[in-house]
Every structure is written in C-alpha cells, then in structure tokens.
Length: 157
Image (cartoon, rainbow, N blue to C red; front, side, top):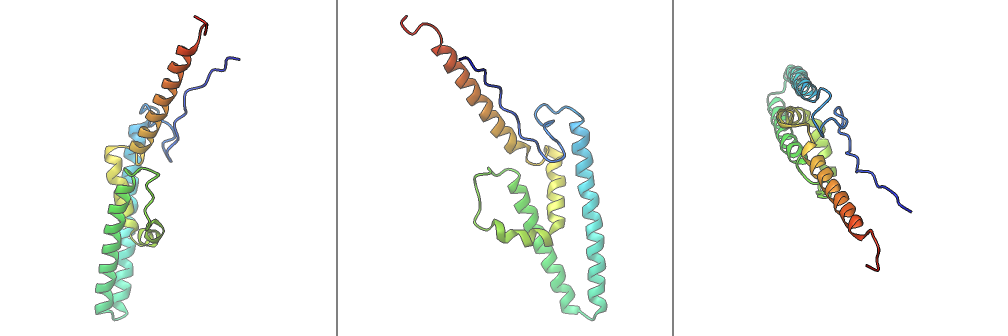
C-alpha cells in the first residue's frame, strides 16, 4: 500500500492566518495596520488612565496619585518586557510565574500594546517561533520522504 504523506501545514497566527509563510495576501499592509491599531489603542488607554489619575487627585490623594503612577508604570514596563520575550520564547519553555504575570499584564496593558506594536515593526508577533517550528516540520517531512525513497525497490538486490 503506497500512501503519500502531505507536507505539514503551517499553524495560523491570529489576524494573519497562514500568510506569514510567504508574506502574501496583504501581509505587510495587515502588519502595518495592526501595529498602528495597537498604538492607537495604547494612546486611548493612556488617556483613560490619565482620567483615572485626575479622578484620584480630586479625591485628595497626593500619595495615592504617586503610588498609582508608580504601580502603573512598573506593571506596564514589566508587561512590555515579558510580552516581547514571549514572542521569541519557545512554546515548551514554560515559566513558573506565567500565571502570576496575568494580572500584571492586565494592569500594564499599555506595555502589552506597545510590545505588540514594536514587534509588528519587525514581523508578525509570534512569526519567528511559528516559522522555526514549521521549518523543522518540513525538514522532518523531507527526511522521511528521502528515507522512504531510499528503501523502495527490490530488497533482494
């Protein structure tokens, strides 16, 4: 029985599908638009946080306002650095504090949005990981195909 195995399929990336493989289907336009959208959302979020800060200062908060700014700044910077490293980290490399970082990423959503926009300048966020995984799968598939082709023929010869 001769069964032909198909080439492995690339995994889609959110908002990009599988256009990241060959950069077709408006990939560059989509990457630019999503990066600008992330920057726009970050600006809207900063404006909202500014309103929250002004509300806290009206409530008579000298120290409260400073603590609020420090907490938001720290969580945004931590979320930014963690998100950027997550785009280049292998999926199997689970950190022990991933669950603990979820609230910090939610509070520091500005950092997450800015990291997404910064990564969009280079490639689709997560493309590097998916490309490495896809290239390994294709190489494995080609090696198996070559091994199968070498085994074909008359075994007695």
